[in-house]
Image 1 (cartoon, helix red, strand yellow):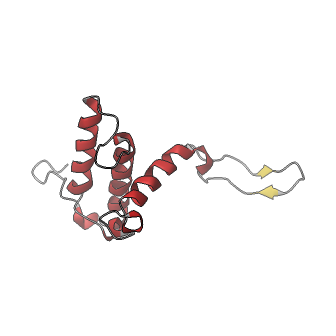
Image 2 (cartoon, rainbow, N blue to C red; image 1 turned 120 degrees about the vertical axis):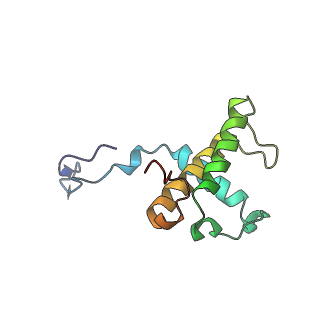
Length: 120
């Protein structure tokens, strides 16, 4: 993601130092909505099976990867909506990708996808 290159000024002249900061406003709102909706629908707050924030506890990387791939295969086969809860498979792909990114940052010890033999 491109960083802001310079100090910005508002029409009133107020300055804001955004140099080196990612412009998070570039993220399409629908992406955030999709991830949050999957989290909400699967939480116990809306009748789902998982406690709120359960995913933050971490898991082996293969867990979100396997789920991501299952939803990707369903979508690739033409099924847009998951019949289990009526949410798009593409939203669940995004959510599982977000889990994987989070786990890579917070739980490097849970990486079970690394190929030890090849060093990859």
